[in-house]
Amino acid sequence: MKRVTYLDSAATTPVRPEVLEAMLPYLGKEAFGNPSSAHRFGRAARAGIEEAKRTIAEAVGAEPNQVVFTSGGTEADNLAIIGAALAARDRGGPFRVAVSATEHKAVLAAAHAVRHLGGEEIILPVTASGLVEDAEIARAIDRGVAVVSVMWVNNEVGTVQPVRQLAERCREAGVLFHCDAVQAFGKVPVSLRDISCTLLTISGHKIGAPKGIGALIVRDRKAVEAIIHGGGQQFGIRPGTENVPGIIALGTAARLAAEEQQSLAPRLRELRDELERRVLAIVPDAVINGWQGERAPHVLNVSIPGTDSEALLMHLDLAGIACSSGSACSTGTVEPSHVLTAMGVPRDLGVAALRFSFGKDSTMEDVEAVTAALPKIVEKVRSLSTVLHR
Ligand SMILES: Cc1ncc(COP(=O)(O)O)c(C=O)c1O
Image (tube, rainbow, N blue to C red):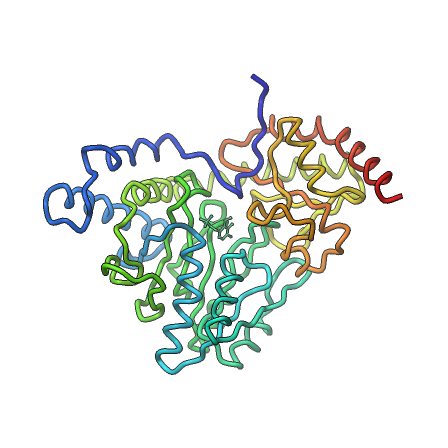
């Protein structure tokens, strides 16, 4: 069988064997009970959930009763932003949220939803390296906001934000800070132990758990109001019968991600840096997006002038290489991604951007596969685009 190169781990990852093994009993007859049931089946499921909470809390430096399970990163981001805005409004506080311009659409669209509900959204601009400046946070705080949301690691370019500093600035002003750590967890050290971050999002499928499970760490229950209403599970913050197998999977994946982060990061960085060097050698006018700032080790975002990313992606796919153009969640549009646009990347480079993202199963063979395929593909796409634009 032809070897396939998967360099799209920031989009999703396969379920890890250890994770699958841990969740299987909760799918079958052993522990399928409803965790709200008082009988033995229910108690077995509840025990599994409590164990997962302890593990996840330990992995991110929080308390077990601060872990609120959701259907994934998107829902956790929505709960954080809309939930914090509603809670503030009900207390007579500002019905206004501030989010950075390079957030995932889950955060940006949630901020938009606050506006539709009659509130306000402030979009915090970023520098060329994708960083939110302290002064911008200060300006938003001066206007009065319920919550400031800035992601730990950007999913398209890998920019690492100075989360501690931003969270501290919010704490001083008595404003909630939410951080989307979906791309950070397992790749850079993530701990809430000494960070004033009240709300933190994680997602299972980026770390080897299945799709459809995530969590919002809620360190102050008064900080958010529920956006889903139902049976009162999870303190009423996120009711609904818990996704027990998913929760068990997230617990196991989170433990492994936290245990392995330190050894994984340098390996990912080595692979990423080697691919970056080779791409620049093959395409000397290629531009690394976000190179100016600190980047998480697993993401390489590169623009190849004179091409368009959809054509590159198609040819790479035909060559057995899976990667992404900007964000996998927003492919299909010909406009450059909102992240690159916010960073001031010119349109022609923005539409020519590829994202290669590494995971724990990535190897130097993957780098070699891209290196071998790229020269011909770039030549082909460039000549086609010259014909089309003549
Ligand atoms: C930074 C970031 N936030 C949120 C999400 C959404 O998470 P989920 O796919 O679990 O809804 C993603 C997924 O791509 C992401 O990369």
